[in-house]
Length: 434
Image 1 (cartoon, rainbow, N blue to C red):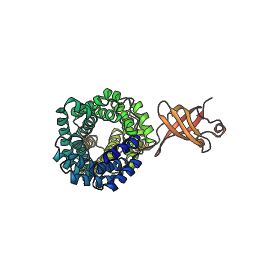
Image 2 (cartoon, helix red, strand yellow):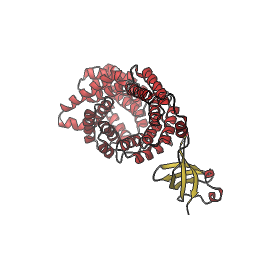
Image 3 (cartoon, rainbow, N blue to C red):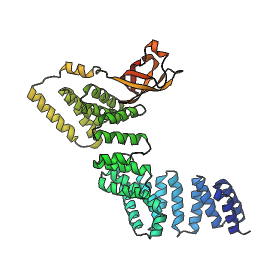
Image 4 (cartoon, one colour):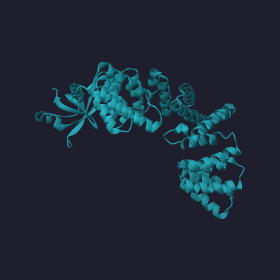
């Protein structure tokens, strides 16, 4: 049996069954008989890559590339091994080499663009040259795609969909909403069931202010935390505050993020519930004291409560923090502090009214909720209550009157008050309803 026949047999016996270990062993045995056989080396590299032995695969493909140095495929395959390990810089060099040899190599240009986008960092991404290099690669991909014959487009359509998706995400960062929407719609035309594409299109529609369309496009998308956050933001902008609040409070149970506290505070501020808004604003600052947005929000609350000097103090902090981060003027805060200064002068205020502060700091009147015990771990003495207005909240058996504790079970109806803690909403003063 010659080498090609042996390769074909291994393909049939093992590769078709995705038995890459056995296939690799078979090819390595063949290589012992012919150490320079490129066809066997190609198969070995392929099996190593499928087995995620990326470093070994890279070395194997380098040997092949040295023998077939004009073939862009091997530079791409080497780059892909580094790409799969998130070694972006190493992959970029090899993808560039592949593109130099084959300028219209769509898959290589896409991988190159993606690798470049991963080198931008998370802060000030648009100041990174890699950001713009990546965007150029994706633009080139679109030109290549448009000139492909129909049969080639069909073969490469999944790559093109990913190109449109990645470009759309970068356009969202640039707040080029219309262009992002156009790009993401093209991606969804190819793969209409892709949740990542839908989520990003929802973000772009949200950025454009097309809230109802954004809400519709993410309907049915897997309910990850970031999808929930987007849905809550959309509902907030649609002024559906109670629906948004329910989602935010649920998220806060597992994600103690300053922006969640801030968004909840903002909703209460819109509802003119200053006590609640104040408490959540303080939690936002506690979660991230260095975020200028948190101090600005607290200043807005103080201002609305007519605590002008406290508002000015928070605005000064916000302006200082903004300047350190962006080396520029926090225009909105500067304008508000000027307005407050004018009010202080016009009203001849020398200090804040402490009684207002006491009311703001004091516990707001607690609303009574009705809900159902949806989970109860009797051996641990705690569980969860779900109520229409607030979603899910934690409870402990100690918050129920002793005579009623023995009757607690899942599906029983309860009446309770809500207490906000650092870990999220907690039910207190619980009463079982018969």
